[in-house]
Length: 203
Ligand code: MG
Image (cartoon, rainbow, N blue to C red):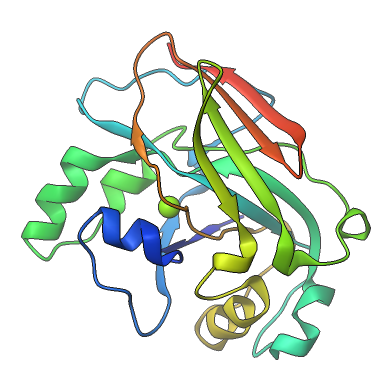
């Protein structure tokens, strides 16, 4: 199983980190060891002092796909959920300034907490999904899939030109504005269309 993530998929988030809006999707990986399920706590790692939350809509792939055209992309998805793309912003900034890969800043252990997945039938219009992240009961991020620079269908088309997606793979679709640091003791809750999808602690 692999995790494919999209960076800078919301213009307002690209701007808040001082990045240009890209002309094609920015794609990176996390390893399967990044996944954290079942609302297990996230343990703050010792190698970073600036772990940021990035709440994102996550799709689970239902069957193998290569050169998938966007009008058929939905057939390759078997669930939608919500996750956090935890980012060691201090390590990422060092990598970015050296023009080096983000691998460790994005792919460290437990850097991809994910909810359970809901069947797509529950969400007929994937271009209109609203989501929200609360930290300690306070809303920090509010997202709407309609603001994605590359919605899920064109993303699947783009990714599968280069990388074959397989059953069980996850696609993180990028974060809206409002990213920020987490601290030990924080409580993170994520909502998709008003439904609580995850709820876990930072320890
Ligand atoms: Mg992200």
